[in-house]
Length: 382
Image (cartoon, rainbow, N blue to C red; front, side, top):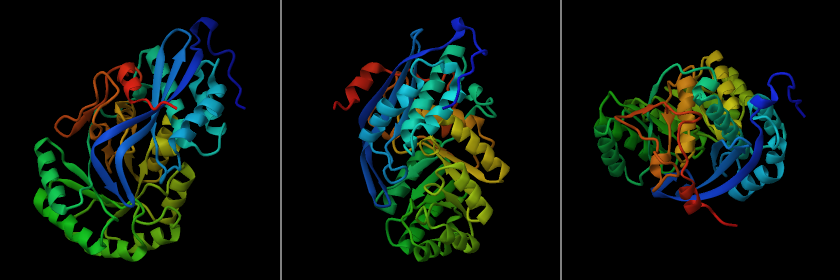
């Protein structure tokens, strides 16, 4: 167990955690999102409320991701209530780095639950110190980020129509969900979308492990005219040899998502030459601090960075990932938030994308104010 420093803060300066609540949420999506092997109609999220003795409250969020982290909502709630909360209750939140270590080592796996609690503590500390998350983690390198929009319609005609509509709203970065249909058909669709949107738009594709080596090769060989920025996670998360072989013949960079659940995996894949970029999510890394560390490692390895919320987190998760995007050494491979896919949000002023750009929230902590009445509306009762 990590020891807590005793000489860094006077007792009156302490920010003592008195209560931790793990809250299960269920919020419908505006329309289904189709990924390889998965159809999402409702978002199931864990919200963690961290309250200090002085009355301040911090909030953290993590989305259920059974095909990525293995986390299911009942288990996430139990992980916080039964295992992680006791490690931080009564402790000084200002020692957040030590508490993050405790959370990390307090339970095997369960990275979503760890992420939500650690993010809630960071938000609490930011509000106490009256600074934003980006200031807590090194300072912002930028104050706005280009937003990436996900395309996952059953028909290419619908993808084209949606892309053109979003272009009028200012979007200039799109990710196609592939690995669902015949690879040649998906390749032809990618080329059609490129022809429809023009050369100035950034376009990439994400297979969510939905391809085997042969189908990934067919897709890559037939999408040269689509000028894709990268192909994300075409193969299973444990097919490291296949990713190396695919990278050798691929005309574009490969991006790892499900394969990189920690920094060690990022380093191993980069050294093997199988990836040119990594998709980093706080729910995979196990927290905000761990994600900041992973971003630094990516930069040192010369990797492009892609930051993303899981489909679909509320503005709590969105605000957190935008702060990380502003701190990141690079966000060359895009940043995607997902609160706009929900029918409703749980904050008083939701995060918005304006003319294809996301501005770093100006408030303290993650910068959004949770509406507890909304939380109760979407809360799942046991």
